[in-house]
Length: 224
Length: 216
Image 1 (cartoon, one colour):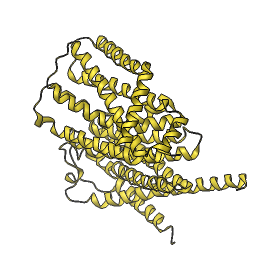
Image 2 (tube, rainbow over the protein chains, first blue to last red):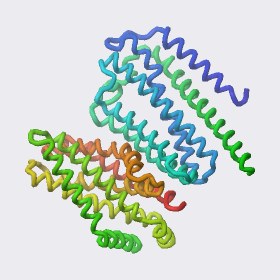
Image 3 (cartoon, one colour):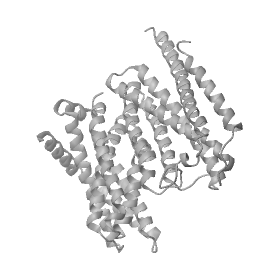
């Protein structure tokens, strides 16, 4: 109970999110209609992605100051699950765009920014496997992940605010707080954010544990 | 200050001794600009022009930085470990790349002027070129060092650098259309500030992170 209480919270929160997300009452808005339910799935994905990338970059910085294999594996796990969350955010966003803007993809800085962010983190994994020297690859990847994190912040947070954008919350468009006047959606949205972040942390914990076991076996085979 | 000047002198001597690489970069700019101008013909607008110009300049900068970093063999790097501090080495590389990139950017821009494209506000555009070369050279100095050491070559260099340079390219392409079209400064001042901030960020990133790449 001491170590897995947050997993129970995660499951409960996500069950609540799914139930309220598909069945709960939502405010009726022009254009958006029922697609407003996607708020509980699309937006938390990006929150989870940024949270996981932040955790990953913290471990990368720690790795640069004192390199241990465990920190590298942890950084790697958070980045990987963050990338998956980002891809899911992109797909849910594409579905949403199809039914509100009329197209799967729009020429929009926010969309391009997020797509390029995902490219950066894919490059991170390419860089990691580009050298046969594992330690050197891990160090290079740690350096690259810090640069990628900063550039990702510029792309997602800064550029859409100064360039015109279709996306809610940018370029003079109202954010979602304006659509949700009676705050009923907030009661589902915030639990959803916490739930999806916890799920991401859970996934990366599983990844880190399996990698650690593999490492242990490898060391046993080598007789270390 | 003296080690930086020594390193800059070394870069210049290496470049002068191996004239091929300088002329190769020059011809790359000349040829690609000319081919592109032939292919798009007349009737394009500044938006199209700036996209083409910046893509050509981006690949020129990739060539410059990667060739320079590949030339630093293992022996020479080991020798430099014993003589210089990482920030001195990085500053020298950064200065050298920014000079090189700015010169080639100006040459590339000159070719377009010779080809008869009408521009306005050229003085301010040189400020954009300068700020852009700060971002390019600090980030590409890191990335070329990294990909040369990882042994990935041009493919790895492109994969790593393209997404990182996109915030800068977006700003610069937008800014150069505004500047060269002769808009008032108030219209694009926010892009200028963003570009200045980005150049500060990338230079700090380079100075902070390079020491970790420096030693194995």
